[in-house]
Image (cartoon, rainbow, N blue to C red; front, side, top):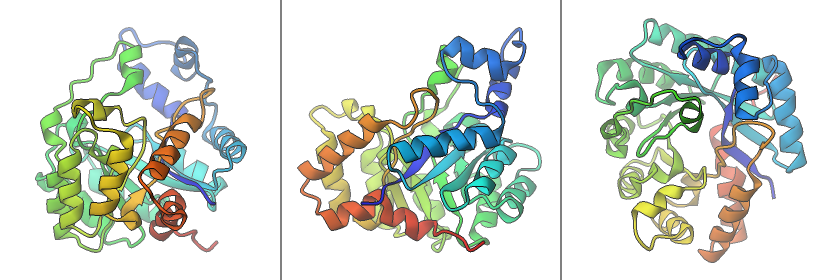
Length: 302
């Protein structure tokens, strides 16, 4: 069975340099010193990190993966990784719609760099999904078939910021999946992805996907948000999602990020067990673990 991971983070040099620039005083050589402080491997150049990722995916027999450039403005790093392994990696980029030049940056990332997923974090960037600046960048994505819009909803916690003592002034009220439904209805040919089953707003994510056939849910992370609903289990989450959304709009993901931890095999094993417990057939499991990914992001001809 082919396994594709729709949600991994690419912690590049630019990622650590951006975090270092937010610290007081800023550390020397943050791409080396911050990983050392965290007990992580330094990323090296983007091409080196791409090689590291491919070695890790091969070790776990993962065929393809979506890698997310995890700070705004890091399109070049992920583009370099994808250019090296275009048949294995799909590039997503994080965008702050309120930043100067956001529309031009989006157009360049998609049309010139070949990136295929635009990631919006409304709670992080304090930009409501109803904001006209969001509509402007979504229009660019909609004009380029083969592109998807990833919108983080629900609870948002960035562990690396907490470990480095950086504040996370997120407005969780802005991460409502029903706002994604509004956009999805306006752009019916554009795929939208809500990660982590809505990250605590499971009911709203189901409502959005049930209303809009272009809304997809990714299964990534440990899904610890289930503790907000007493008695809820991961098996029940999968069973409900399959019954409401269908297997063709579920995307397997792990939320893997840093090394040496690497690809989170434990997340995969837990989700495989939940799928079995939910009674998902082998054929439907194959769609969740890889088929839907291939449909949204087919390998492009050289």
